Amino acid sequence: FRQALRRRKTTGPLVHHSDRGLQYCSVLYQSVHERNGITCSMTDGYDCYQNALAERINGILKNEFLLSRPADLAQVREIVKESVAIYNHERPHLALKYKTPDDVHQAFYRQKTVNLYQD
Image 1 (tube, rainbow, N blue to C red):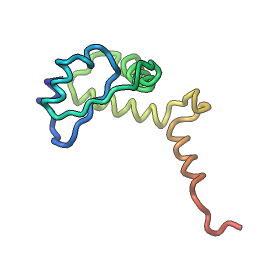
Image 2 (cartoon, rainbow, N blue to C red):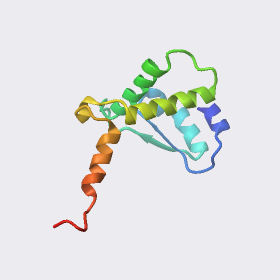
Image 3 (cartoon, rainbow, N blue to C red):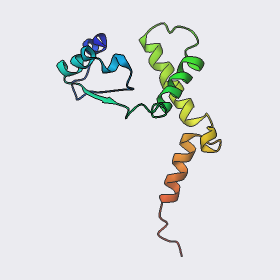
């Protein structure tokens, strides 16, 4: 975490979101946030399902795209970029009735379009 702060390239506000793991709730960890002006955000209560989407995406990245150790940070960035594109545009999701997130998103906006010449 400290290394990430040292290498940070932007100066805008920073929010760190995490679950309520003991390490994230510790006084030492919270003091690092405070000293660096970081807003700490945590899941509400101890509902394990609140973090489900993030855990799913992390699992997909680890188990499907990071099968070997990347050579450098540039390669990691490229792998993440590619995996997000596949996840959103190519990979059908059971919860979306086997449509991609992009298909669902596009359908939503098509429904919101008003036809001015409609009877």
